[in-house]
Image (cartoon, rainbow, N blue to C red):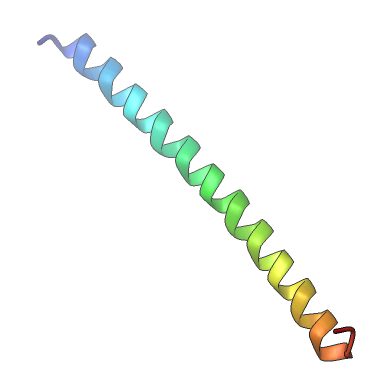
Length: 47
């Protein structure tokens, strides 16, 4: 296995991890926003 093939594999793994982290961050932000909104509704008595 040559250096170029190794570099390509690392690039693929890196971009996969990067996208996974971005997706996780988006989901986490969305979930926390939804939870905060529900908590505000709950606290203000709309249930």
